[in-house]
Length: 357
Image (cartoon, rainbow, N blue to C red):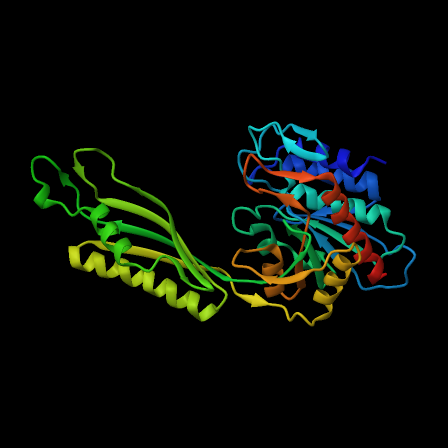
């Protein structure tokens, strides 16, 4: 049996940037079959589902333990190194603790547990690019209706809720013209976009609502009045109605600017997921918090404005919360994890599934 440190280091060396997870999923499938004797299948989206029978338990209700397979960029050619009990990359890439530390902790917990109910280990694709795997997960292949997602940084936090997230794809259509010879015949899509952005509520709207424009692309040549600008934005709120109102305000700002300049605007708005919060007194939250306390950490129930697989699954009828894996600086080349934290994450999960068995 490989140690959790060796297991983790082995996994991060298999590339799995979002959209290119297939090789790692097959690698993980082999680990689950070899280390746990799991029966593995892939759903139509490519999500991995591994099933294990109960161990020293008569409980028949299964529990899902989940962590996503994909990592962010730069995540190709990761070389882990250990310094003073801390695992890092060599420095040119992320480490991939988000979320391979979660996967390592799950595997360690299951193989070390003295007893547990039936367990379903799920590893989703495309979490980092929009929670796509959780949205597409074939729930006909999953029996669990309670899930613990191992994808938080901190071990002392149990994430019980998240926001409505709305994406906006905006195209501003002006009129092209020669910028040196006859600029008055053109309508600058860039100026229209600038007017809309300057008039639009953005950033921190209130304590539970944010808005952002993250991508702007437009124009083709230096001496041409730009005809088109493409903008990708988002808004979020822990209050669903506030998120809808913010999206409407962003739409109105662009439509008003376009009307004023004689331009056109096309806007596509999509609700990516809906705000939801699990009651702190519910069984799944109390089970998670008891598991954290079992290793000497006092937990806090948290509602965050980031999206999680747990939020998606909760909206699909699966009770779900997020537990931590103990990493630091996710999504950065300075990402690292202390071996002690990784081991403690596994201990939390071991105690959790033993408490359910």
